[in-house]
Image (tube, rainbow, N blue to C red):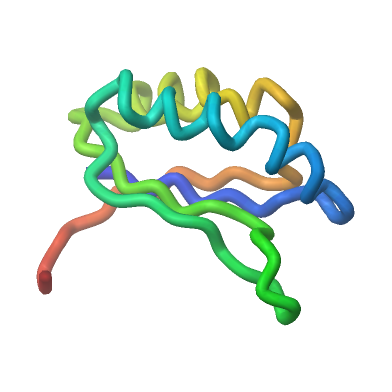
Length: 89
């Protein structure tokens, strides 16, 4: 599994909101997301994303991340992809 860890660009909440339905549809359509949710800033506003993918390679995770409507809308200041091993839960 791989974790996609994204930080939104400052002041981009409107971009996130405008593309949220497309992002959630992408998650559903691709069928590889194990769990996902937004990071929240001190005001409780969405400020990034954590997406856990059930894919077999970093390349597949990168391809998924590049296809995300949030990425296509240029929402993110930073995107990290880390291999992740589930131990608890």
